[in-house]
Image (cartoon, rainbow, N blue to C red; front, side):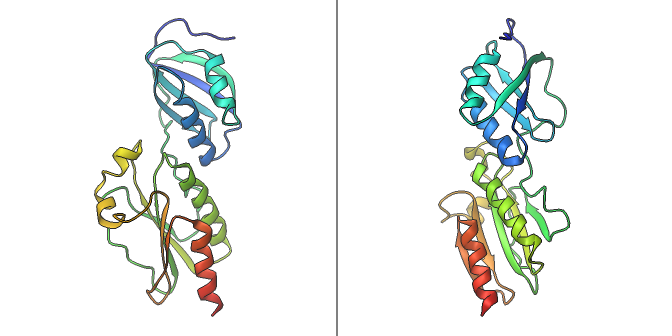
Length: 212
């Protein structure tokens, strides 16, 4: 068992099984449960997680936390600082290249303007929200086969729920939302088709309208 015996600003862990944005968020959540850990950043591209803590960390403790979420630890090393570019705020729409998916807000107020001639999905999500990543992946897959659908993303770009829900766009558009993710779907005619938290329901509303 590897054990870090001296206090340090950061520890870098190589994690097995972290192969998409949703996995990265689950890894972050699992490692945040380890006592003394104050922050966690992760990247599914490099399969790494970087932790800051107030006490030494052991691979056994981190491995136990990761195993509870279905992941494993490959190695753990003390580092002077977390690698540049390692972050938890993984873009859930990173796989939407070539699709009509545009981020229109990172928390600032924004007008929700439907895309003319298309079904428009307004997707409200946040980096710490695992279901937001799952929903974005589902919608990305759906849009790949439906070029008449666009997505406009409102990204509550903060590290936790309290900070995210304090952003100006929340009071503007999410006053009655039950939580995240939250979707608003508008048809090509500008009429609202769906509003709620279930991505499959958003898709079903579009398919129902298209079938008429």
